[in-house]
Every structure is written in C-alpha cells, then in structure tokens.
Length: 328
Ligand SMILES: [Cu+2]
Image (cartoon, rainbow, N blue to C red; front, top):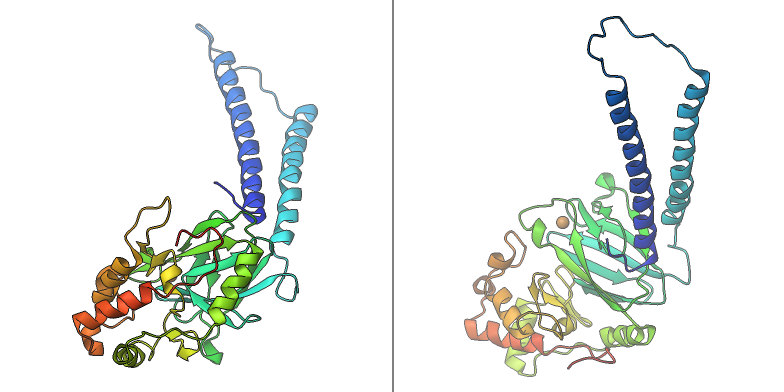
C-alpha cells in the first residue's frame, strides 16, 4: 500500500479505482433498498395485494447502461495496465537483466550480462527497468517485493522433461532504499523465513558494486584458516572467483542487510545485531535459524567452535566498498 515504483503505483491505482467504484455501487444499491423497504412497507389495515407492475422500459435501460459504463471505466485502465505489466524487457538493451533462482530457502540473483551472481540482497540501480527471468531449483516459490510490484511464481527448471514455465516480469525502483522481499508461495518448513532484500542504489554506486563483486576473492589471511574455509565452505559456496555456486554466493556478505535473510544486521536507523554476531548465530546452528535448510552443522564439516568463530569474523569483515554515504 506504499508503492515505491511505477509498477506498484499502477497496481495500487487500479485497486483504488475498482474499490471506489464498488463502494459507490454498494452505497447506491443499499440506499435504494432502504428507501424501498421504508416507503413501500405494508401500512396498518392494508390487506389488498398492491398494484403489480411489470416491465418499465426507461428503468430497464438505466440499469443496463449504468453497469455497462462502470465495466468500461474499469476495463479500459485494467487492459492498459495488463499490457504494460506484460511487456517483455528481456531483449531490451536499456533494461538490466536479472535471473532469479529460488531455492529452499534462499534467493539467488545473477546478472548474466555483467557476469555477477549474488544471494539474498538484490542490488539494482535507480535509473533502469529491471527485467526478471524467474525459475526455481526445487519446488514452486513466489518472488514478491510488495512495495515495488505484485508477485510472480518461480517454477522448477531442472530436468528438460519436467521443465516448468520460465516466468518473466519487470519493475523499477527509482527511489534509493532497501525494500523487503518475501517468498509468497508455501514451499516448506522455513517458507516464512525465506526473505530477501532489494537495495536500490544510484547508478554510480551500482557500477562500483559490480566492480567490487568482480574483484578477486578475499580469503582469510591466516593460511590454515583459509585452507579450512576452502575445504569446508567452498565445496558449496563461492567467494569471488573461488568455490562453486551450489549454495548462496558469499562475496561481500559482510555488507549485506542480513544474515540468512532473518538475522538483521545493524545499520543506521535499523535495529539488529552486528554482522559478526549474526554470522556466529547462523554458523553455529543453521537449523535453529532456518529449519530444514541445506546447510550442514559445522561439526559435520569438521570445524571446531573456534574455527567457526574465526570464519564468522572473516566473513563479517568481507565487505564491498560501494556505498557513497556508507556508515562504515
Ligand atoms: Cu519459497
């Protein structure tokens, strides 16, 4: 109800128009009904059947034409909006192409034209239409950023024979800010915790973000810890050009809005714990934060408590320098 972009604004305007028309119709119909109930009720001593009236050309024309006009008033902007919402930007060179892949219970965002992949925080520039291609790696999820647009299902796109429809849609976020995103399709035990953030930044900051995402990976300084991190974490995750992207990409995780989407990192004007504390909470017991997720317990990975703390400290310090008025 608080639109921050043209798509959400158009959708809210349609809702307002439809609700206004419906309320006016409701009030008029109820007023006429109340008037008739009072005016034509049986008076004392009245026993005869009232005069029976059938067919009134003028009235019938009125109650056919008025609804017809109302339906046209609703239909014209609705059809206009629908064709605007359905416009395909996937071949538009001025749009930013983003591939969304939903996983139980996290979001992967890749920018095919930029060669960048990230997770949980979708960074977009304020000056472009963002064109989305959406799929899922497992069950059906739904991609929803209420203040920017309506929701769109993500279907499984794994095996050729079971391939679901690849959905497309678009929105833009001309105001800088962080917008909350949700999975809007019940997808398993941690569905309610499957959040993400959309961060709209200036074009300049966006370019810096892309450059810092493409910079060589920063590994833990301690050689022994770096080896542990590679063997335990980079067998599923990636940082920069290292590791594989089965799990969420961790490049610059220290700069994100949250850890595992539910543990909010403290920021100016936002409550939360430090990134490091959140990372520790998550890494020590991932199943407690998000039941049913794919992240193994650190003990299964052969990590000691101290090593987990050291990895949390390293990841918290892995920041991307791209925000002009950044607090850090
Ligand atoms: Cu989901």
